[in-house]
Image (cartoon, rainbow, N blue to C red; front, side, top):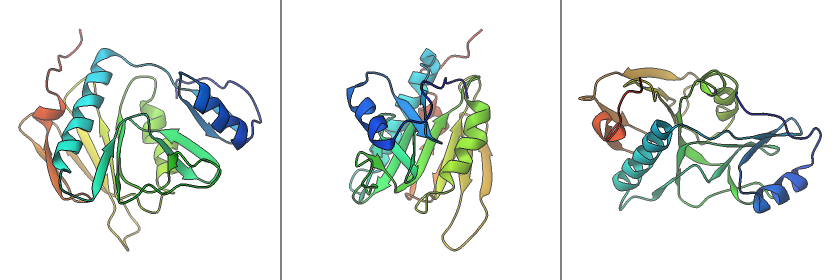
Length: 192
């Protein structure tokens, strides 16, 4: 996943205290904390663009878009960070970590060389434990490509769609809005 283990067997209480004081974000699962690596400028740009588009699309709706500072609880004792997320209604949390949302409806990850395997595999499996989650977006930063995994209520499988053109518009059914790839990739240039 590109992140490094800092300390073995730390309690949730110790983790929450560390997060409140730290300038760096850490994920927590299996009793271990993992430092989050910084990203390239294209990662920061795309993350900002999608969060802004989600925020704009949700005006007047009962849902709010959050940036990468919102911790996500994938279980009572597992906490991760996404590049962007959407929560409808009030944020719900476990008592152990009151600042980590356990009820996102949509989660976004911008892929990097160091995180792609983790975001597609283990992290996605963790996200699938979240009962409220209905859509998961994976956004490439090295080319124009957005992948959307959707799950509808009472359906046990995830539907997959991909978009590869700046002319494409993604229909996000979970939050009833559309986002253009041209807006997600606004200002983006393929790195040499």
